[in-house]
Image (cartoon, rainbow, N blue to C red; front, side, top):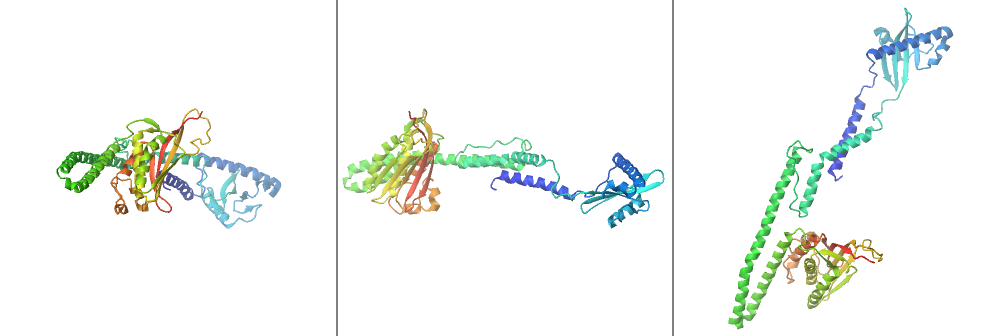
Length: 461
């Protein structure tokens, strides 16, 4: 059982049932007797029964006692049974005890409750009434009203729900925080006794809020540091590029060396640009614009450049889609750049002669594939799979490749380029559009990047 609420509820209910059972097993088995007016009423009832039965016995003999059956038997003042076989040893002991003490004595044995009571007829005649009441032993489960179990379930459920409410709030807060919501905080009761859950849980909630504040400060400081450093690097980089152009004019014989310096300066400029773009996107909570665009429009702009880059590397890009008409909301340029980073990364690791496959599919049910007429657009999920035939990624690194500046060791061995920022930018852009992104190794080698985005299928008249 993974749910703390379920564990708490079942434990609480089992303990309650255990208390019922223990109370039943430990309760007295013998009849406690009836004090006061109740005992007096029983004495009068026994005297009336004895008076009637003895009168019938005197008139009709043993036949007069036949209606009593085996449950009630009389003994004379000496303890001898009247019209009945000799008493069993336990009953005979009860009879002697009653004759000695004068008050009723009872015994429970073998599922039968036996009581011996002294009765008086007239002024001088004394008899003893032996009554046997058959009954089974008390069961291990208590005799409860039919509503006892439903009521105990309901009460236990309510207490467990209330007591685990702070823990559930903590769990949801941790999930939101780990998903990137740095602003989530818990509403802590001002008093230790105002809410259920105990002072320990309240302290844990306070500690979570302090932790969230500190982590947010550190993350914001890191973002600010990266942004400031990137901005500060732009100025000396611009001066370096100007100096390179002047050096080319003054020393034409050093053009090859200066070109190499220029290439590295361009790479540094590209890295700074991507770093600033990532820092900007991480500070966003939603796309900066809310435009509507078709999926086909994005790939119409993206594919020509990607096919050109693939041909330059001796590979090709193949695209298939059944969702070009599906509409998306957000910022088209941001989403185009995200898909461009993913496709460019696939081209970079695809060997010469290989193929990068791009396939867009829609949810079959929500997408209304049969073309049934609808008056309004239909919500739909789009799956975009970008697959290459490169070396793939070891399974233990699949969850890390969307981290900024992270590169798998084997990717460093070649001259593939890249800064380890493109996939991080793509992931952030997809999340800003309420989508998801994941990676899988392909059978036979290669990597598949699966992007899932919400869209609207166009109305069909």
